[in-house]
Length: 349
Image (cartoon, rainbow, N blue to C red; front, top):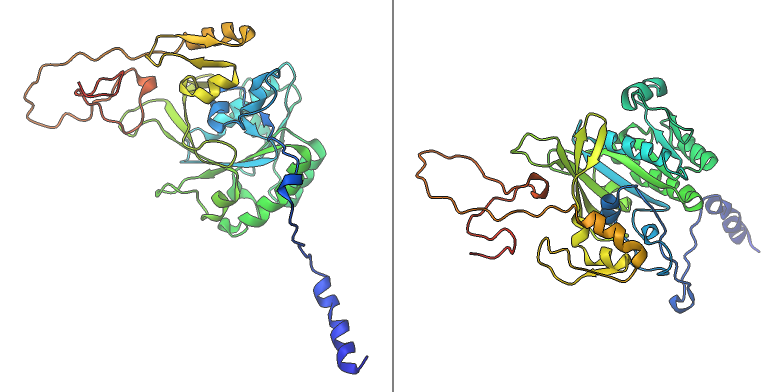
């Protein structure tokens, strides 16, 4: 070996001391199909919004097929004070109260754990399944996830993580967390703020890296109400565009909408389907007697809008504002009321 070759040989360690990703290619015909397991949010409507993989053994209780995907990451964005943290705190309490409780962990660097308990959970006595940490370094958060293996992790907010750096560190943060949650099955939710243009604060890297992106907004900009909506804008494990309506109450958060009963896939996962699409008909064909009573009880709560009587035309000298279709729970933000359209069929009269 001459001196030139020897020099090139000893240069190799300069490259080998770095982490090298080796590309792997698989024959898909030899790969076993594995469905994504889910964690129920304890709200059927929110589980429906997150979606389902649409399969599984029919003899298994179908709720396992809807909800937060395990080993995945969500991003919840909304304006300050809209209800992001309050909604997630309500989920944490509901997890804690289950017959078989699920553990939760929240990272927040804004206030101390004692103040968090006093301000976010006043009067509530946790049962030992909720952990709070003020660590804002991603490596410390990963160590905590590895140690406690919670079902749900909340980071409030993602901008508080030291390595985030106004979005420039989003890719590294997400990829580090993925490695640990693949082993623990944890679902992680990042809380962020929306800019005026309707995008998550800190650039586009984070929304691109996460699996599910949700926007939380006021139910209507034109009506003063305690209602707000969570809309799934991006979903790698289900349909996008599903929306859930929630209401602020003195004691917490309450779900107001029941859009899942209009989804044929949701009904089929419970062994049922709608035979007649006439609103309020309640004609359901059951395939599972053990679920029929449950479904009938829930479907009876679905409210149907009464036909709006045609009003006499009155000449108005000035603009009177936008009139919205009632009842309030069934409104869609920004949808104007049109008296020429039948409210049940959606067809022109």
